[in-house]
Length: 157
Image 1 (cartoon, rainbow, N blue to C red):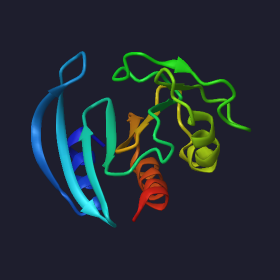
Image 2 (cartoon, rainbow, N blue to C red):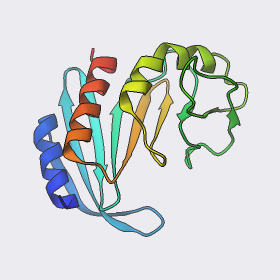
Image 3 (spheres, helix red, strand yellow):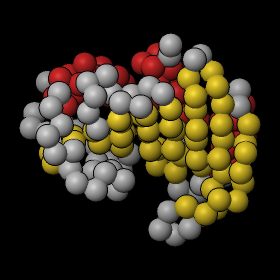
């Protein structure tokens, strides 16, 4: 599926709408669509282009009050430090802002959720107390559907 088809599917899946179709994002300024939706007490904001699909949930995030980036350093988090042994059984690297106490505890609580996402090499999650974002690289519909359901299960009000 191309980015336009993924955008239409995502808007339908979330019961939302495509609000922009010609945003230019990323280093390569790829044409990007923006989708917004409200569903199950969650405020979704999604961005889809030829290379990726960002799934943002506003108003939900880290309950430990820390900022985290799981599986990869987030380009949006300027100063980060690695968290030592963040998970009991997963090997994903985790980064937090300096002085981010509670990061390891947050990771341990989220371990089943993160394991279920089955993140690929360049995919990652960022979380703040107010927002969680999942970056999907070249996602397939079945993968997106499964991950959306995991996000709903984890963060629905």
